[in-house]
Length: 88
Image 1: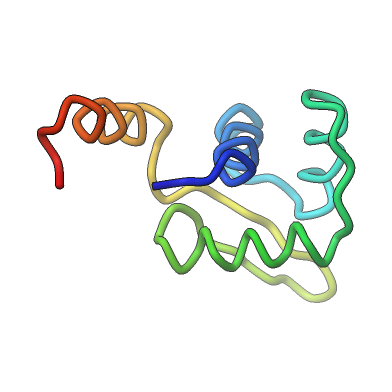
Image 2 (image 1 turned 90 degrees about the horizontal axis):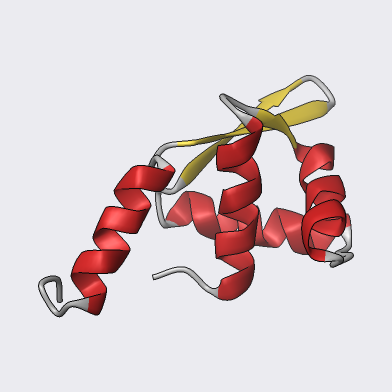
């Protein structure tokens, strides 16, 4: 299960496309949701999402790129099953 912030981060990643530059995630959160987070906070949430196997962080030199492992469609399907009690 994702927290509200984790879900917002994933929505930014899903909507951006195949992969999103790490720094772009903060910009997307500010633009879409009016929320400003420090880079360290965003990084912490990305590591949590990576541990939950929702995304992968790919470091290339000094830059990091993030891409989803689970599609938004898969996530919504799982969330619906959980909500209806079909998934424990």
